[in-house]
Length: 342
Ligand code: CP3
Image (tube, rainbow, N blue to C red; front, side, top):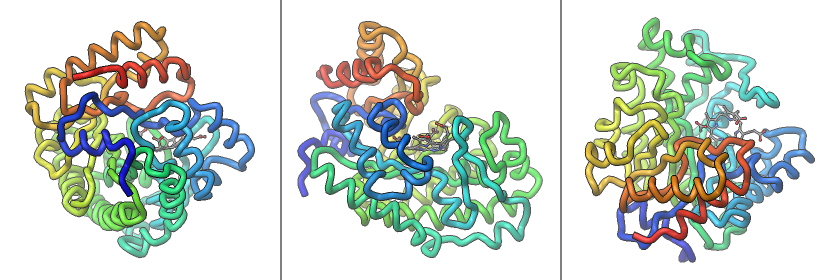
């Protein structure tokens, strides 16, 4: 089916467009009163993620309410550890928690992996099909996954952490075991993302949310080779790599077979342009806190950012939108991008 608005797809492929497309990481979620209303009726976050009709409904909410140029499937990166055998819980106001974690070789060996693990996630594929029906060709649908390193971090640590000491020290203590786990994750992620593409997503984004806590050497050894394999396994759709905090690995990310590099708000757009050139498609990178300012300021900051990136840019924030962001600020951002012309 032909898309009514294919701006994001064309921009991701590096084609000339009249203005940058815009969407927000975490746009499907608590910033929207419609989302909070549905959430209140349910037992919790997981019920929403695992019920395809509801996941589809909240995926489409930001398209209706904000007029963004893409939908991103409502789900979570933690469905992959669960499909491999590590169940997660989402604790209200605290975040993810794994009752069982990876502590040694037996735990890694007991994990399901590859096609068998990816096939556990039928509810995700059904949510994609239902979302495509609801979207009815209005905008492209983005599918996503966590990067192997970021998923390892949660599976070893068992929850969020400032330092991820257990996970990060594993790379020094037991590098072979870490690689074994990263192999299993990568094999699963490849099948999972291929299934997502087959079910109807138009683009894929990989979140390496904890990239920035690794040293350049650890990032080179324990993340980049796996990201490379994921990129190479998905030739059918544009792939965006968002490695938060990985400013030190920008040139190496640029060498991978991905179409878009996502940037957090610590980057100067002009500097990244100088490093990577005018042809590289970049996504980002307004500070999510900028959206708490008044709309006139938001419009000005957005215009400045768009000027700094120039063409070959997808407008977004530098990380997910915070749940308590005023809706007015989010709308000012989207409208400022959509009023822009190259
Ligand atoms: O972007 C979107 O709109 C799609 C939905 C989406 C969610 N999680 C829904 C969600 C996406 C893309 C994710 C990815 C995700 N999940 C990441 C990578 C992106 C990033 O932020 O770096 C990570 C690290 C996770 C793990 C995770 N899930 C955490 C740490 C938390 C708790 C923090 C929080 O915001 O509360 C979640 C929960 C979660 N995932 C929520 C949503 C909407 C909030 C839960 C709720 O509604 O009660």
